[in-house]
Amino acid sequence: MQSAKKKKDPEKKEQPAQDDKGLVGKWFHSMKGEEIHWQGQVVSKLSDRFYLVQLYEWFAGQESNMEIVEIACMVGWSFYWSDLQMKEYYSRHAARRGE
Image (cartoon, rainbow, N blue to C red; front, side, top):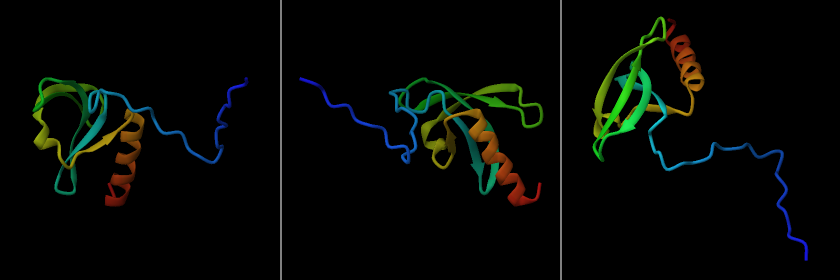
């Protein structure tokens, strides 16, 4: 007896695999109003309420300081799968604002 294999639909885009890490490893922009305030990456979940984030400098893109942030403060942040995706968003955001 032969098992049936599902064929991939070439028109359907692949979605990143979901994992159990939640926000850990995601890149982000935090916002103050309509302005991007911080850029960085979520490093670890310290508790149900707090995360450790690594911030990055705007011009050189080097690591700067780390912050402990309460999850409630992260509401409204934009999260990305990669730093490239985060940088592309920033480029579009800056272009719209004429920067």
